[in-house]
Amino acid sequence: MNRTINFMGARNIAFAFTLFLTLLALGSWFFNGLNYGLDFTGGTQIELGYEQPADLGNIRQQLAGAGFADAVVQSFGATTDVVVRMQGDDPDLGNKVAAALRQSGDHLEVRKVEFVGPQVGEELRDQGGIGMLLALGGIMLYLAFRFQWKFAVGAIVSLVHDVVVTLGILSFFQVTFDLTVLAAILAIIGYSLNDTIVVFDRVRENFRVLRKASLIENINISTTQTLLRTLATSISTLLAIAALLVFAGDNLFGFSIALFIGVFAGTYSSVYIANVVLVWLSLTVEDLIPPVVAEEVDERP
Image (cartoon, rainbow, N blue to C red; front, side):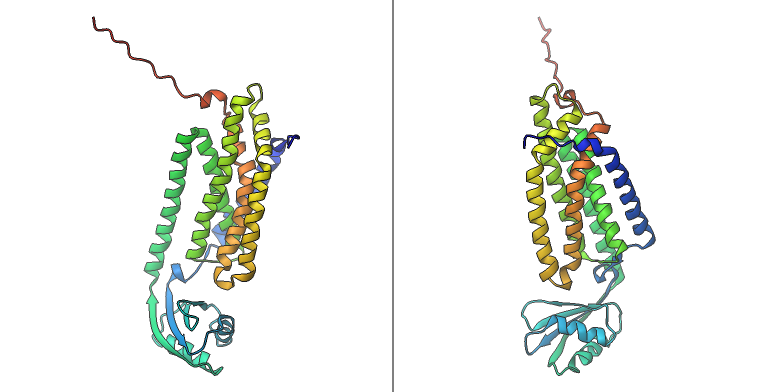
């Protein structure tokens, strides 16, 4: 690509848009909160066994018609094995669900009924948050050693933006937040970091090649050089996620939509957040020169 795109020329507009979107996300997160699923709030898990392969979509419709609209229906093991999860601690809930499903003529049996208390869900939520913070801390240390601390700050600010925006949109639309969505958030961190490192690596290399170029010129050239790679990666990833959205069903909807939002946010932040932080911190070529270690002089006679 011979023509250099002036990405940093729009950095002030991008910053205003980023600030506006982040404030909206934080506001939705604060006022609406996350719609925690049964993995975090606790509830009843019912294992059912069918004589014939189970139709999960039909089971969801039957339960919704019986008043169990929030039930989560999944298959596990064989096609005749189904697990139903819903809120409530009624000891007779398993029999009520089975009775509602038998009205359509299906032959099934209740194999197991378990209650997961909210304390277990709270522990999962806390451990997931700690795991995310540890991941961010490890990333910052890695980038500080591989590049320079200014690169680490830019990457962390970019990753925090991606997580906040994704969670804010999930909060606004009240998408169920369960363990699969938490896994998607961690995947977003990895994806966005990879995209950011590619740009940072080219910026560092161009400091050696483009000795007379300013930092903004360097970033524009480096981002332009990696643009085709970024677009190819993002588009192919979005196509795969779109297939999950269409064909994976309700069980992976939260996971898919979180990844879809995160890939968009990660691609944007790699250009207009991580790079802009480098401009704010006034990265120079001297920052990339390792310090000279003074040689010890032997003064012994």
